[in-house]
Length: 288
Image (cartoon, rainbow, N blue to C red; front, top):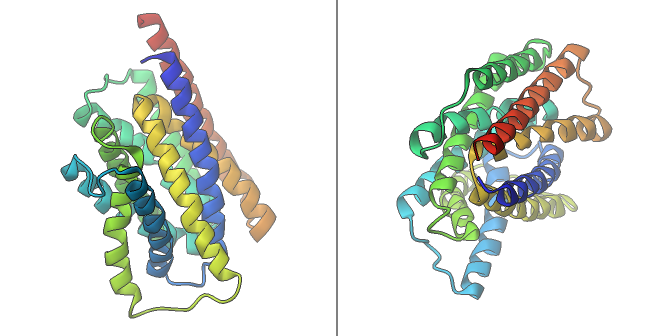
């Protein structure tokens, strides 16, 4: 993979990670609202923004590669709903690091669906270590039961499928055109549900809801640009750095303290994927 494209992909991914963390903090502040309402509010704002942009630029609203666009929309909706639900009830850093198993699932899926190279044994070892770190986060935090842990894993698997669909559309559709399909699915599904469970936001909560949608759509576009740059096994692991941001701001804003062993688990996850990425880049440079 071209080193310039790889660097650009990593930069886009880091930007997306920062923006997603900011959006998740807004969701945490709105945790008293139902999950389906949070997904709907986020999606309706993003749909208006992305739809308006595509109309202004003259791009087709429904895109080109509609099979994978629909898959991206379905699994993106599932992944977001399950993640938001865990975000409401467990510490934001824990919810984030569990959901960040998605790069592992993405790499595994990409080996079979995207024609990417097989991983070396040491890469499997680092991914296994990362999963062990996630289990430590769960095991040393009594606030995380198996229900929320399972939801987090489901969210990661669904997100991985959505990322794969994004990569399958990188040669056919504009990044914003890929993003809008998530909202085309999420708005009618969660909107129908929300109609029966609506809890009206009050005062500044409307601004937080608007911020969730705005930050998320920019983050989605940044991530889509990242995945348009090259292989998932190089770019996706950088999502893990969002766990550091989530812990710092969760502690600062919501007083969410984690045990030292849970923090060790997060450190293991970050170290594992970082070393794996460095080794992967070196191997690619040597093989040219």
